[in-house]
Length: 268
Image 1: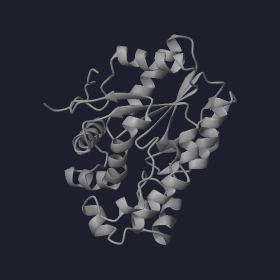
Image 2 (image 1 turned 90 degrees about the horizontal axis):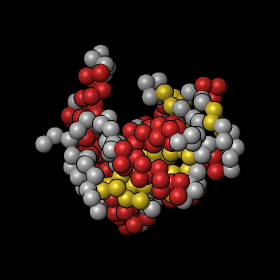
Image 3 (image 1 turned 120 degrees about the vertical axis):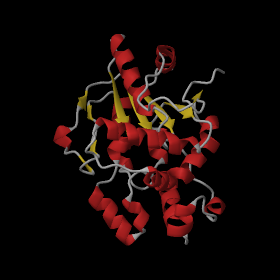
Image 4 (image 1 turned 90 degrees about the vertical axis):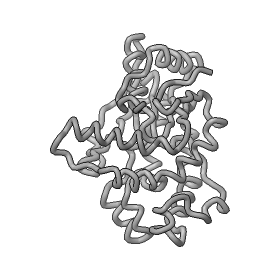
């Protein structure tokens, strides 16, 4: 059976459960972590709607919104490693910006929420960021949110063809892991509670990401997109850290929502 569309709605019961948990623990910042295609953005959006129905002020910040601009990543690609041109892996985010936003929300201060233009591959000017006034809840969602770095010994062997063929010396993966160890802990610490959408394994990511690409192309027929081979190469950029998330986040997250290969919540 094929998985449901990546924009399928989560059940009202799950949304209520997550929102109740956040309110029971007086959480101003809730992290939502999950590999590509797990439905993080959809869940966060539904929680915002449900919060609004209760008279609560809620908003979403995505890890994607603090990507480094194309020009900055291009410089890293020249100076450090060509694979850093691809946005998404650790080291391609302006982490201090994200941390400042989360800390402002926790302090109850008004804050502008960064927004990234993926088509233009640049962050929008600050004047175009929405302003959030004294939020009751901020949903901070992203594919590697909360994930710790690996031990140096785990970086020696490549995990896929991309690492074997394009990072034979391990420069890229060591650089990303060092960034994850150095820069991201303050961002993770600025969350009050963490939810992990746990898929059955990394193997489902290709199917889910390919389906997402097909959905996007169907919605915009003229849009340039990736074929299966392109998606297969693309997801390899995230495989190492995704597998680290799968190893570590079930024990680190405060709430774990287990999914099957069809993105259905597994009771438990």
